[in-house]
View: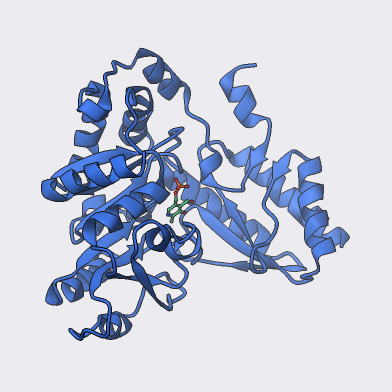
Amino acid sequence: MCAQEISMKWIDLRSDTVTQPTAAMREAMAQAEVGDDVYGEDPTVNRLQDLAAEMVGMEAAILVPSGTMGNLAALLAHCDRGEEVIVGDRAHTYMFEAGGVSALGGLHTFAVPNEPDGSIPLDALRSAIRADDPHYPRTGCITIENTHNLCGGSYLSAAYTRAVSAVAEEHDIRLHIDGARVFNAAVAQDISVQELTKPADSVTFCLSKGLSAPVGSMICGCKAFIDKVHRVRKQLGGGMRQAGVLAAAGIVALETMVTRLAEDHQRARRLAEGLSGLEGLTVETVEPPTNMVYMRLEDTSRQVSERLVADLAGEGIRINPPRGGRIRLVTHYWIDDAALEKTIDALARSVSAG
Ligand SMILES: Cc1ncc(COP(=O)(O)O)c(C=O)c1O
């Protein structure tokens, strides 16, 4: 069975992390020139790092195994133990990274409510920044997320990012962007990704989500910061030796998979439209959508959601059960128009049978 057949066996809308590498990535991986990256000697990793830094308009970049390690290493490099990180209360860093910044880094988190669009109001940010008082932890960093996963894949604008950056600068604290899907944010707004990244001190983005590479995330920032991250990555066990085999796929991802994200966004729109008339479920719309559609079943019983997941699985479609009452559907490279229409039909049938 070839790679494409394996990928297409399931229509998998659980996440864009399920994406398989493309044929071009597999070929580049097979041909990759490699070396020991812990010695800085892997030419393919070095090429990926240079390319990533150039694309986001920062001085330097470093490859890490995951977005979670990317956020963790960035925050540990920005802050000293006992310092505080301001974060949205729906942020991935706060909700889904197993409390790593506290458990491993001794950092305190101050969670400020996110707005439905994923932003944190500027006045709330300002009032979360600690006064210089020995009773308080020192505020070290603000983290924002773009696009915002739990907030429906919504994106933050360049103007908002600049405004947050100005608040951070005013108080001499750092700004980190969890940009796991920052290229989706740029494509959705039809702007250069640099408009979203350059106002920050650092950004983490993932190669392994909508960009479809098998493994890897990049942390980008100034040279001195990336040097610091290098040591933290080592402490976390993230030094990866002949990582050029992974970096080769990452280069293909950055060179060929960014602009096509617009197709995933169009399909998310079609999915939202196709589902919105259906009785028994409510679709949350983000305008314009990126690559996510969230929906809620009106009947919130476990039986109904389990039946929906099972009905779809019976038709070769994978979705996750609801979390917090919401089901997230994610479009990506391996979801074509036919897969999308099949999903809309299957969902309609299952929901109306209820
Ligand atoms: C917004 C966001 N940040 C960070 C991550 C973590 O990435 P990884 O799964 O590579 O650790 C994810 C993963 O889904 C995410 O959605």
